[in-house]
Length: 88
Image 1 (cartoon, rainbow, N blue to C red):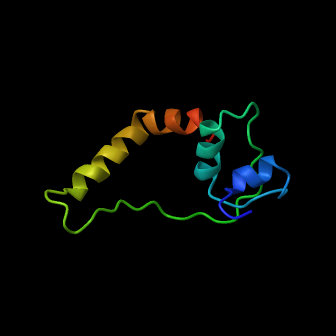
Image 2: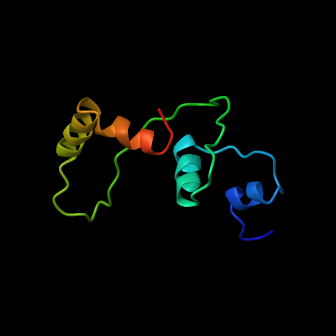
């Protein structure tokens, strides 16, 4: 059905499974307030995380962004956010 999302197709029994990044699946699951946790299967690949901004964005200090990300990893904030979405 054009316009349906994989989650809608899954809920309606149109598909049995879908492959997507775990954070995308978890986000959609939480947004839809589904009563059970998704069953995540075999991890097919791991990809790097990139920080990106438009070249026209003034005053971007990527080193500050890197340090901020490192800080949320160190203080447990990243883990708490992932846990809120059922991710490790």
